[in-house]
Image (cartoon, rainbow, N blue to C red):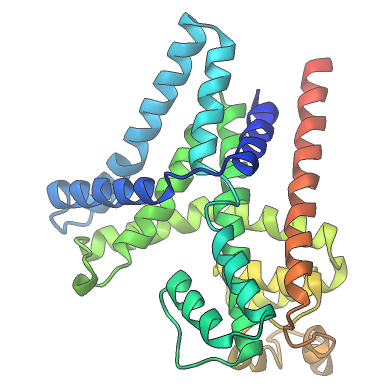
Length: 324
């Protein structure tokens, strides 16, 4: 059921994109704000309480509906429920319109429009970046979004499905992203979270994303330039241990051979602490090119090849379970 649910959800999302993304994010923000307002008094243990209520209560409801449908109406109804939940939590089309519009503006030479669209998507843009910098930022934002909307949901849905939890894993991961983003807002921007709630939300998000980000990076390495991707992955683990997003960007950078890290961060790669050969500190960056408009197609190809690879592996695992 897990493989078929993922496959059907992706196909339906490509044919008929999910249009409730804004409403879903609004509901998620309102739900999290309500939990924080009623259960977050700033004590150390209340961060755990708030996160558990915000993420695990909806996940529990999803599990209950999954099993109720399976027991009372049969597995096909549970399958339809799984597809519906995945349709709402997983998919490229929830963010790909940003990528398409910015790419179109860049290809037509309208850098000002591209800059404005990028600002609307990322919410933060320092100064007026040049063309190469905008392409770099677009690739970084697109890869992170693809990971959080597709591969991260893939991972947690698959784990939950193996444990008999239906689509609960996908729900927990998606709410985890909302919780981390909502508690990370400044007070002026509308955050109601105490320091305890913010700290626990960051810790839980790191935990939720630890395995998915490494599976995504591994997938990029397999379908891209393997040696360079793994080498940059290793170097960034030394430079920024525990930074999941930096690891993902490093693996992407190596897989397609372009420079995606900020210049200051790249300079910090040399010398890498613990490297036996200091002259090799630049080895992972010399061959990389400055981002160009043509690299956007390479990123799209990288992501889709990774999707196909994981779907094939999941299909083989499902077939092995059925035959075993």
